[in-house]
Image (cartoon, rainbow, N blue to C red; front, side, top):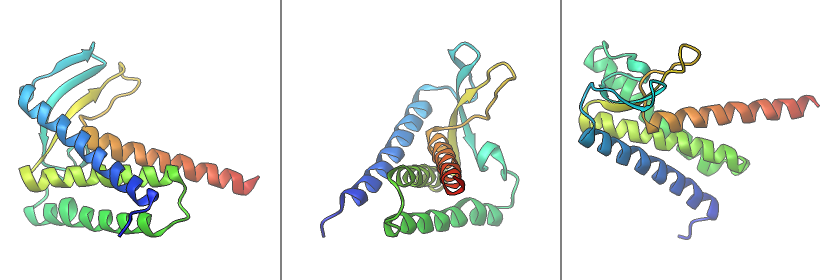
Length: 165
């Protein structure tokens, strides 16, 4: 079976997203002392090594083991499977949408892998622009998922604007 350029693009985007995330986490686990903070760009951009047993920003870390299994593993795997089937089947998606969905899938798979392999997700980046903008501690998979979501939102706004005009 020969893969189309589109399918190859999807697969490579997912694989590269997972690889970048996993390599960055290996480096952080190896070289950054847990719970210690290192300044990358002053106090604005810092590096940490935190194990997150919950979801985004630690939400759900106090859930029962059964609820964690359902909400942090089973549900994400089901959603990732659905989205993966969708982007391979829906040939009407433009290239930016395909890239955004593949980035979301890659980031999601990378974090689910961590939950299965380690029981937690390694987070390490933090941005604090002096109270103007501040993030929780996140990782490359989170960045991929968030970037993909922002891209899809922007693309949907652009499509709505075109429909109105």
